[in-house]
Length: 243
Image (tube, rainbow, N blue to C red; front, side):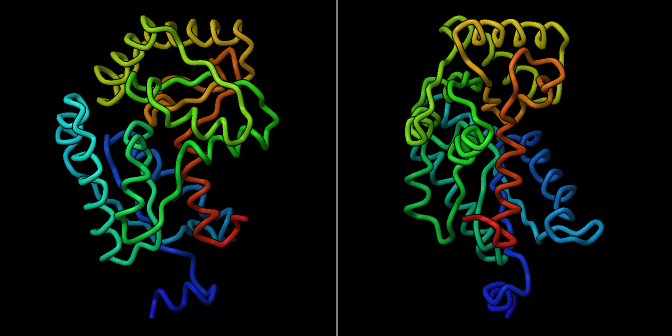
């Protein structure tokens, strides 16, 4: 009955969140809940949300050894669990594991939103042309963002190898634990200054923990917060506002 009601537009769709690291998943969930009333027109309101996550250790074991098929297995398993409790579609507020997005969608019982595609759409909406992309080393060296940015005729720049290694260390040794260090913030600001010199007019926070340490208030470039962008896209999907 609930899904039939949603199809008739009487209730928003049920959002399923596939968690990887805890800070990013928690931040995405919080945004959906706090911004929901703007979409539903009722104080404190938000769509039904369910979250499932396997141990972050499992994800990292497979990622570090390059076993992306196992990463996809975890994501698909989460999607099946979410579908079983009524989720209508899925998102994952983790950029890196979008490496296997196409395989996951092929096997998933419910549709997904792609974080990089939503970021690209937002960049176009805001009139940006050339984006710097920050994230884990795995993400920055993958085709997750390039494939979507090219689709929308957006240029992009990624930091150099030494910078990619240092950013990766900040993410995995600090941010995934919720640790924010001023020295690390200063380093990231320096990296973004370099992207600005290369002609970038905005920077993608392509790791869902990066908003913990970088914001428009400290960034030399306007930020595209992938966590927030995905959460708002999920809200639009839930209430039928997406084109």
